[in-house]
Image 1 (cartoon, rainbow, N blue to C red):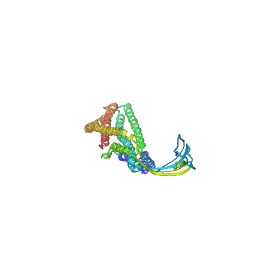
Image 2 (cartoon, rainbow, N blue to C red):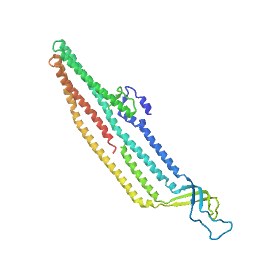
Image 3 (cartoon, helix red, strand yellow):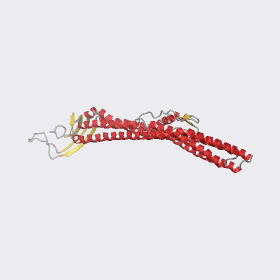
Image 4 (cartoon, rainbow, N blue to C red):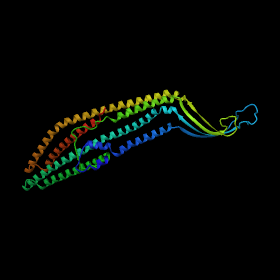
Length: 407
């Protein structure tokens, strides 16, 4: 799906921030990472399943012992057992305890996979803020380029009026040349912003896997509707807590006696007949019980460790929520400050534009020189640039506020 989306993104196509975020989420490297976690989980489950199958082993031994079983009387035809004895056997064991507890053990394996996926989701989500910064950087570049066009028109109008004044003998040629030099300076600034835009687009392509260019039309979002999903950090905290809960259940398994069935087929001297000194085959089958007492001595410490880990996760969660609330308050403060200034921007721009128009009239009459006119144009340009920056920043911070939500 990602390949089709990339190939269909042609020049002049409209681009939205939602498209970029969705493309980022489906970018191949991140999806491969999720697939890798699934593959690792499958291998671990297969390995665990293999431990539930009957365990087979082959044993061979030769011993020499200081004494042997014997009868204190001599019986014709029966020789005393040799002190050197030999045995080789095949043994098959089937654990009943592991079979009864397999679901608990498999749950821990799955919990580990969920934790790794949640960590991956957290890392992916962090980059969304970077995409927002890049996207709004592109929008700001577009707005600045538009303002440079306006500045060039104003300077061009000034050149036309100055040419007319020159033709009427109201000014000198150097005044015209000064305006042309200012026009070149604006074009230099325009080239710098265009280069910055292309660099930002390239960074966006790297993160999203798209093939965008400066020819694409990047839309300004007027309705903030992104980042509506819950923060993945909470899924990570929940997954870690679930893993600890399931791990604690495994402590009870360690306390249980290990019960299993086994069968043994062997050949040795002696066989099962302890009175025979000959090599013979034999078979043994039955039930085996083993009970380790060590887990009883370590259980309290194991439980205390899990309890401390639970506490650590809860503290991390509370610190995360606190950090997000602080960041939310900072964003609100920035938005409020921008809104107050934005209310005044239109009035400032209106006054500056009127001053430029008045300067143009003076320029045509030869009552103002080029440097003074350039100053008026630059002041109007600065006011518009600042207004554009504030408008873009406000929308960006609104996006970041929503990004910061999900609490």
